[in-house]
Length: 369
Image (tube, rainbow, N blue to C red; front, side):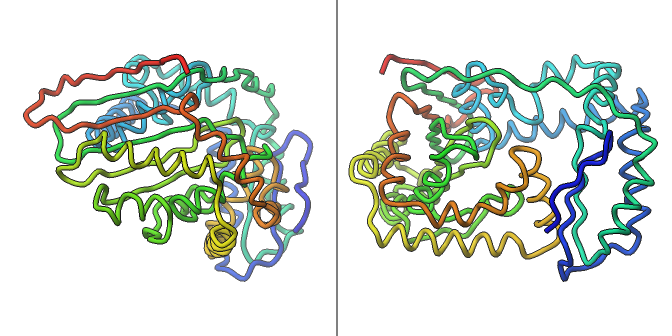
């Protein structure tokens, strides 16, 4: 693969060589569209108002999904300072208040060539691709580099809890632990540990997080096999700054939430005390390797991964994924499992309340360790 080439005042270009995949028939037209989107957005006031309605409807739809609502509230409770605590779609008061000029100012500040990465994947001629990209983007002036985030999340000092009582038919439990960023030493050991606990997911945000259940995992055996839960799912996202490792559990009908929480925490406490077995480590590595292969099965997945990793940490980290997974030892996993401690945890409950009003109870409490 070519090293990323940065044309002065232009987007950085990541150009993989000769992937045998479908070819874009009109690459110049696609580059024209992207250049226009970067430089010439109009942000017509009427269109902004129309889109505001669409986004608010989408947000309210998510709030009507108990699992998604619980995820939003647990994440918000887990973060006190870092903007990772805000949902991507935003908060309803902000969506209602922001003006067209606010949107346009943001667009002009961030949608600039020297803050962009152009990714071209396919059976392309690299020299021709560079020429086309330069021709389409050369006229767009560089902007002032936007400020970079400096906020750091303070260390959590006690378990936090969120409880939502709202009309529904199913109870949900979420356990969230502060987790390392992609570039930190503990990230890949924790990824392997999650494969042991809930199953291998890989690192592709587009394709990794809706997998068939892996019945040999520890939490599946402890919860689903015992009919305490109908599903269990773990998520560790590769991020620029420290984020969360979360475990989401769909509680079986008629089972009290406290029973499921106790069973899940017993399993996590055991792995924190005793680690995992050599056989579990080997199986997790095999499963993660298979996931990485699967995640590179299309030009879309490849392009997404290259662009995403270049944005958060540098594309070299994408190529280093498997070597770092392969190098994980039992000692590394034991060290990563230390993060599964009570004072690093936020617990979320969604408790169905038959006949409850739309006004629901929500509480987040921090307690000393």
